[in-house]
Length: 115
Image 1 (spheres, helix red, strand yellow):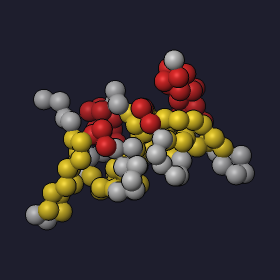
Image 2: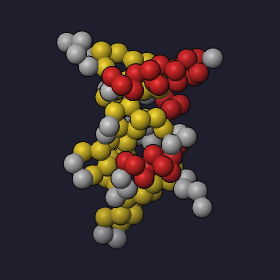
Image 3: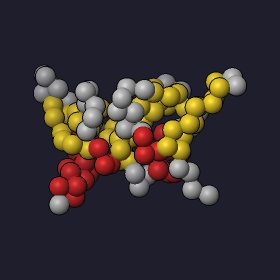
């Protein structure tokens, strides 16, 4: 069965989002958080690898700890010191991290989206 949503359970409260609402996933320490463009977030029990396996067609790895929604990819930029790449996503104020080794794949995706 193909997953179409993610969920967070805290006690008796369960929150579920359609996967199409997620702008990006970010892993930090033992947790993965899902973020929407409106700033809302969920903490998940899934690993980034599990999410990539389940939703890899919809998300692209941009950094070892980040998966971004392919359809929201807008462009690549540098930080102010020009020491790191960042990825702009449509509808988000802040860019997400972009590893140097992922830049070619992301540039190819941007070309595909523009076509």
